Amino acid sequence: MKELEKGVRFRIRLIGVVFTLCFALVAMRAFDLQVLQEQQWEERAERQHQKVIPLTPQRGTIFDRNGEELAVSVDVDSVYAEPGKIKAVAGATKSLAKVLGISTRSLKAKLKGSRNFVWLKRQITPGQSNQIKQMKLEGVGMIKEHRRFYPNSTIAGHLLGFTGHKSLCGPMGTGGLIVGERVDEGRLRPLKRGGTGSHSEHEEQPAFLPDSCESGTPNAVGLAGLQAGIRWVLDRGVPEIRAHEEALTQRLIDGLAGIPGVTVFGGLEAILQTATVAFDVGGLAPSEVGLRLDEEYGIMCRVGLHCSPAAHKTIGTFPVGTVRFGLGAFNTAQEVDSALAAIEALAREGR
Image 1 (spheres, rainbow, N blue to C red):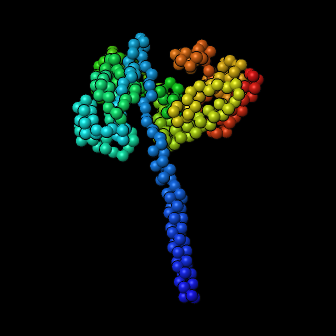
Image 2: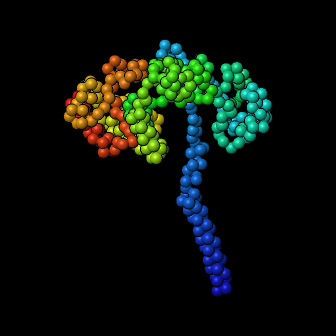
């Protein structure tokens, strides 16, 4: 009898040890999944539940001084696929490759991948779009995107003009024109002529660059300042300057958006814009806000239409305009907070 009891106790202990070991293994596996691999599984879950589809924004139309269009944006289709929803991959691959002008091998690799979404070809032609629509392939769709179109082909495409006082930290009145190698120099005609400079023996301005486009006495002092500004930008680095301005811009946007009576114009995301923020204060004209910021708080801003009446017509602020703060690399978070405090005080009076 005692031997039987000993055998039962032994088996019970053995079973207890086995269960303990199993529990320990389960606990270790749970710790591994929930703690050590937490980020990996979170990312995997997000990929299964979310799709990030980058879309190109619509760009504005560029006009010449006569109002003629130089660059416009037109709607075009971009074709994508959801590989998991395509039943006959071989047939779809053959049909799509022929229409899109893509090799069957590369297209098959895209459709057999593990991704839930894949671009097949961006910005296709209207003819290609119609053919794909007629196929009615399950798992294949199209999204409208914006494509840049130049009515006058490549006219002025190899010319880049810039101002020195915006972002480059140079003095006002400075700037430049970068001329590409494909440009016919003989077709470049300066607005004004005068001062033969390098060829004083001639009555006419030289025909070669840069002399042909640099009339009169150069603004040597301004150009020296522009050079110093460019050196400072390069030394500090554009990414660092951008990160600083972006942080200040978001701080300003969030602060303004939280003040009752203040309307902020734009997408409210600093990452999607430059370091300028337009807003208005209910009950007060932009001109009054600007004057009082200057006289009472020592804060400079710009008011009105900002040389862009068409933009203000679009957002519904024409002809009065808005108040605009422009931030730069030399501004600080404390200055942003001081500006917010001033606007909040003015907004209380306007309510």
